Amino acid sequence: GGLLGTATRLSQLSVSPFATLPALEAAFQAGTVQLATGISPTAITELQRLGLHDETAAAPGRSYEAIVFNLGSDACASVAAAAAGRGSGCPTADLAIRRAIDLVAARPDLVAALNRRSDRFVIEAVPSAVAPASWFFADVPTPAVDPDGARAALDAAGWRDTDGDGIREREGVEARLALCAPDDPDSAAAARLLADEVRAVGIEASLGSGSCDLTTGAFDLALATRSYAVDPADLRLRFHSQAIPPSGDNIGRVAFADIDADLQRAATSVDFAVVKDAMVSFQQAYLDHVVEIPIGAVADVELVGPAMGNYFQSWVSPGWNAQDWFVRR
Image (cartoon, rainbow, N blue to C red; front, side, top):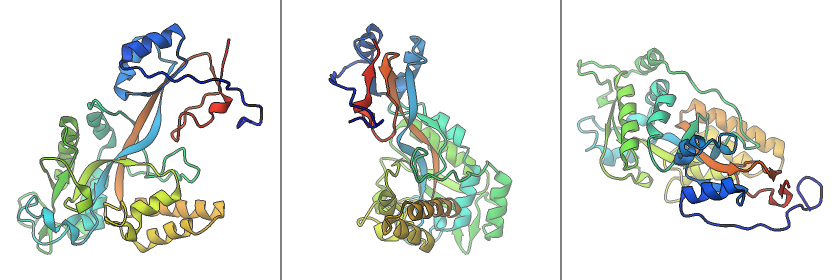
């Protein structure tokens, strides 16, 4: 039966691949195709140029762009050459450095830079690693851009420019960071924009060359595409202290007792209320510790014909309620 408490409506579903956007557009406008998924986000402009404004659906998909920090206190040692002369230590392990970067990272400007790429399109800011459509999402507030607040946070933590070179230092360690980004021109442009933003408050971020292998810990901060959590268990594999590579996907070397406790509580309970409470607590801790800085959700783009009934775009799967689809005649 259908998900809506009625009999199944769908009796036949034909799937046709299209090698080019013009061929798909022609079939859609002729009415032989009622639904098209998996469209490149860069096609949005062309689809709207053709007048398909109402038919074009772009919603947050399964991934998001983020600034990822290396929180390890010693794992960043291998990037010492990239952050030449800074001294022995990992600046991004310090909350004040992460918070300062969070307060100067202008998300709309970074989104605009990233959207020059040909492979994906970022459509909106997101507050955390949990998708807004998820049942355990909490709308935690993200900070406004505040360079003065960033400077104050650094001053309070003892990061000061004592030699007049424009770069802050503390206890013999300079705030010189190795910045990693995907190996394409537009990601590099976004990385350079971020470097300019942090330089204004006394932090230097040097963009390395070549691709990034974040699993090794050979970075201080990075621009990266991350997957949303579909289930609380996904978050445990990414943010629990026992999930640092090679044991999991905790590439940021996140290790906080409160985050571990929230993830453990969610993993060991079958009570939805308990799980939801643990996930709300996790998302607040994620923000408080500045574990990473989400920039924006990557769009899923679809064409939905006016005759298509009971179709609802979902970040989980386009066919989640396929048994309830129908075509109006």
